[in-house]
Image 1 (cartoon, one colour):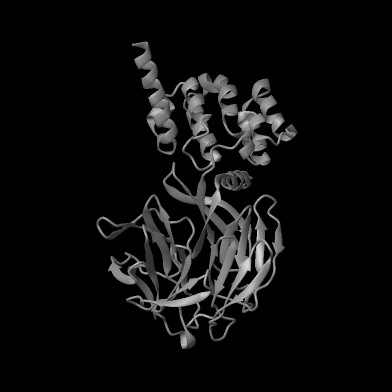
Image 2: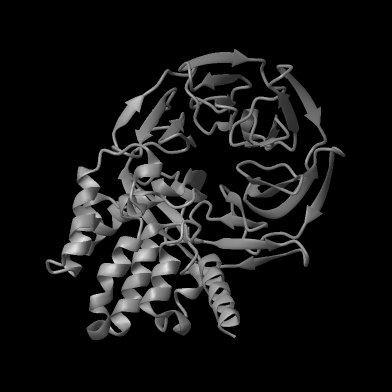
Length: 425
């Protein structure tokens, strides 16, 4: 009997670890014993994207019975991955909880004193949890104050994770190592950019990298095997048919063969090691339905089957060997969506969006396509493939055109803990 009870307890803890984001807002979570909660929170495989969410969950549990649970904080706080918080967050939120309690105070002091670089020798609270990739949305619009959003799985909504001042917009943005790379676009007024501006996500300092061969506003670009490929765009006049490649390791640009069409505001994505370009606007603002494929191995372009409808600024997402093209602009906002099979070189239409828009950020979350924001839009829609329909979800907290990057969760921890302190002051 004792063995069966122990096994049931282990299964319960394992379930809580795997479903932590969903459980922390339940009544059941508030009734966990300190011993059970400590085992759950200390697990390296805890299914949560951000350490701030874990801390806030502990605070919710603590506030539920503050008088009796204060003594348990010295056991629970060191179960957090304290090394993942910004130092200001620890000073603002964690240290005031203890009132001189020596156990957590010693753990917190070791955060600044530790010089151990071998992860195997670090205490658990200085280690990161098992690494996971998180999606961040960066505003790519005219506003000077650029919010970064993340999807909070425990709250089931997008929320601000960070903000930074940056006057550029209409750029391509990528994450590489600990940096955000902003390629081309424009500054205030009519000034177009030929630059790559690099934001260090640890120090929040900027540096400028090697420039492109020409200024590119409304370009499309992709990151593939440590190289950025930039296509088309314009400098305030007719669009370009030119393309070039930036090698991040060498900080050098290289010209590529020109595209078959002049275009700006096109969509682009990577599939099976090749780069696909969709639509855009050509000379005299003519919307294109043309699709091309660039093969970096052969350095050649191949024309693909045209889309059913011409469009600029579409959302583009890849799911299960299909490329989805969503919304866009063609003398007005477009709701139409379609998907492309690269193997068959064929298109088929899918259900239109509920709300027509262009400049959509299209991403895949949990095997579902999400269509986020767009020009002057807060709208979020999720595509239900089984029923071929779009479902409206909780809107974004900020309207506009966003770009998506995938980053390791230790960067999310840094950004969110910094932002939490800023919002409190």
